[in-house]
Length: 171
Image (tube, rainbow, N blue to C red; front, side):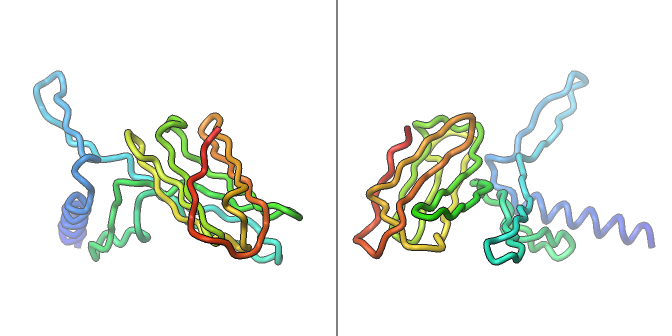
């Protein structure tokens, strides 16, 4: 039984390695001449908070598409990570706060329309990408954003429906 479990685990890791994008696999030579393959970073997690209606909101983040199903080979690793994002509703505004550490302000791109905001890093590592559906209609043309110490904060004024998406400069 133990040999069978070991065989299944070896097969699961083999399937896992095939799903990892090539730029997340690195090889390095040790002092003794042997070569070690390393994968990563591979990030997966959940954020839980209580919503305005008193019910918990569970959101995932990271660069794994679904909960790892190692034995079935259902794991999918993306090059981009999904940043951890919070949407905070105020009386007259909506704030989106995203954790995107390790990226310079110049490498971030934020676009929005009245229903959603997209956050992505355009070059370098780490790579981030997330589209966030907003709970209320906003005025994307009046949006303001700041980026400091890996935290991106975007403030929107609540408003009715408008035209197409606009680019948001990061201060």
